[in-house]
Length: 149
Image (tube, rainbow, N blue to C red):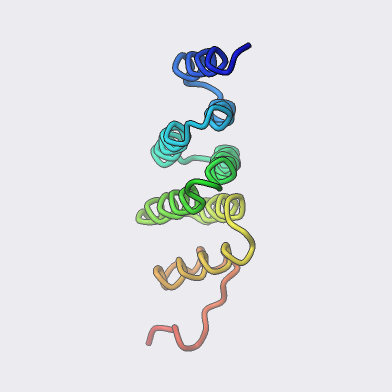
């Protein structure tokens, strides 16, 4: 199949289905449609933030962010990381239960490297110093310097 025809077939598939976002992102990567990859991952992040509920959806969004990062590595390498970080920060504006922090930690582990994860989680703990459950779930210990008096 000629390249132009292949691209047309792929674009038609991408436009007709809203399911399987990972497959759609991969297909967009095949035809060089980075902006469509961004649209798909942005929509997935928005949907996740609106309906955050369990560890299963957390694993899914983390894998989608990692895939978007991989597909955008050449053109916008920090896009998915920044999008994921912003999503987590937005979610943390609301009160949380311990299980929610665990799910957020799993998400962050899914799209950031180990050193980036540690740094980001420490940043969040500094932002919300009174959230003991978050500190414990994120594995951060509060130093004496940051203890409120």
